[in-house]
Length: 279
Image (cartoon, rainbow, N blue to C red; front, top):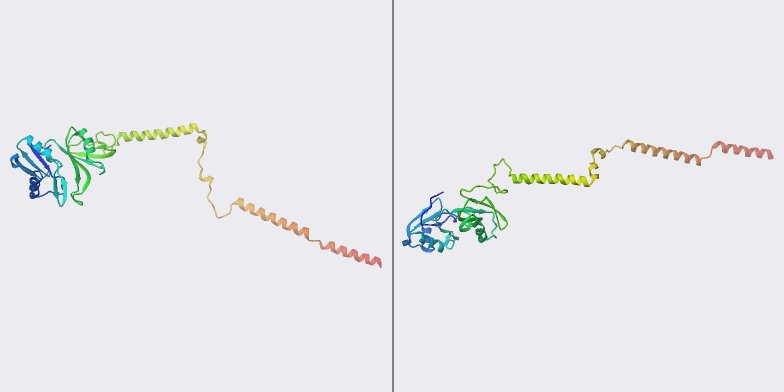
């Protein structure tokens, strides 16, 4: 952790999409912060933290500037307006809260985060590349922390991912220290086991209340033989039987209609005999 600078005011320019030049910083301090050189001991542009350190003559002066200007002054950069955090240097750290919708205001976010420490400032983080100056959905807080913040918190019914320096990473599901990649969270494992047990018990209860379900069999492939274009033996037998019956019927009909030739001839002979007798 970096050394806390005594009686030092921090002008936090990390919210800008790019680092401003010295002329722009001078104009902001003079026109917006109304900085009086009689209150100042030193001014330092800090590259890695993207801020301006202003050492004041005493602590009260630094606090006075913080109360008057924190998130109240506008820095115009590339024709876009940015509110700049101004605060007294302390053990404050930058906390980033991800995944909140823009409809959730800063006030409830700051109110929730006070359980983890003092909230000095809160604002929207903005794109530095691709869409410079456009909010990227991350809430940027300066806080004096009481301790590490869990990696996942719920704000306004929204699950958020939180990160800050020296944070103890925690599991999303059980809020304990994050597990190794090869180890499953015990909360998830227990829930899965409970689900499996419940399903098994439900199935057993269903069988006990419905005995017929125990004897019910599933259809097998033998119950549904594949269809074939060739007629099966039973169909062939039926066809032959029907053909034989039709043939017998036809023969019977022909016998009932035809008259034997021999019978007709004998009757003719008899008639001739009668004629002879008459003579």
